[in-house]
Length: 160
Image (cartoon, rainbow, N blue to C red; front, side, top):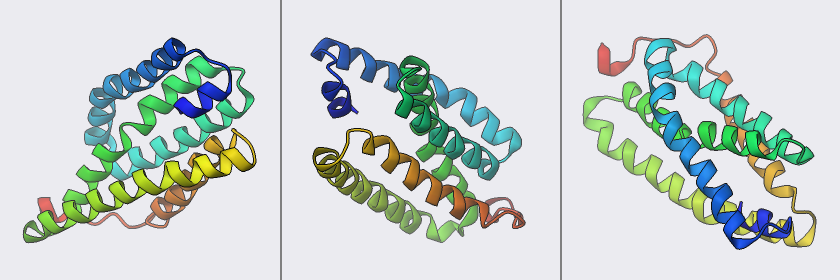
């Protein structure tokens, strides 16, 4: 995001401000998103969050509504991991929790390393807007994966 903002001509202090907006939105989103996940189910909330990330990316492509789009991206994107982690913890046996957490953390780490690197190279060679196209594309694949479980609502192992 800082690279995209820089390419849009935003000053260093402006980049800091917009990054603070996104991170603050993620912090502010933790409580309500967690409550919604507890009330309506983590899978449903994950689906909605991912869909909202896609909508935020589409809004950023137009640049007409950057402020609300960045806030929405922060609130929905930075709360995905905790809800996904909570959902995953419901689905595994007690003795598998550590291995599951290791696998999730490893996938998060690999994605955090490869995603920005590949996206920056693509942005350099094609368009700055590829940042949002990449985020939306990965989110769409994640949404399809979450939707595959549409009729699958067994009792969570942790509550059985």
